[in-house]
Image 1 (cartoon, helix red, strand yellow):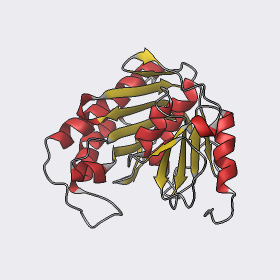
Image 2 (cartoon, helix red, strand yellow; image 1 turned 180 degrees about the vertical axis):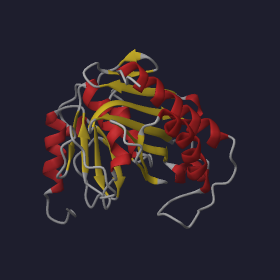
Image 3 (cartoon, helix red, strand yellow; image 1 turned 45 degrees about the vertical axis):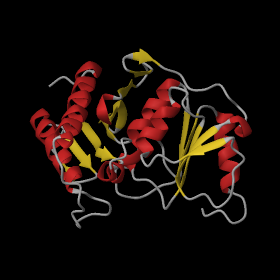
Length: 252
């Protein structure tokens, strides 16, 4: 099959829609006990995604089911439900995120919000959208005027105006792409590639910036290693956040 950008985008939209539609019909959010933070709802969503991706003949790297090699030039990096703890607790802040790579390079990304709250999408070289409309990040350059999304527990105040912790990195990084905040910083033991890759492409295409420790986002390493992620509306905010991570008492 000829995988042009539109076909990839259509596939990503179908997969994320299937994930959320299937999970919305599921009432079991108890833990599976198989993987860190995995709920039965995650598995239900993953199964729905795999049916589509297997039929499409593409490779898959999913948080829930791992690697599926179909010898394709296209690889789907998938987090069927990002923020499943929120879903389990009835907090309506969770997403389905997928990034489709062509020969190892991110080409298309979709982050779909639960409850029909909207869809972020991006195609490399063609910008990013929310609800089908072009988006751009905030123009704020001062950290003291910024709203910063935080994953994990910061050891000290970074000098922001306000902070938010929503429990879904894919959601938080994507929100930067439409000006809902100015920065994101991971203060946990790191994020896996499925947590950030789709949102990173969306933010980059919108005009923002993303830094991942030891990683080239144009040729990401597809494994389960956890990495530190900083994202921002511009380099000024990114640099200010990066400087803060070097302060005494802050975990590296």
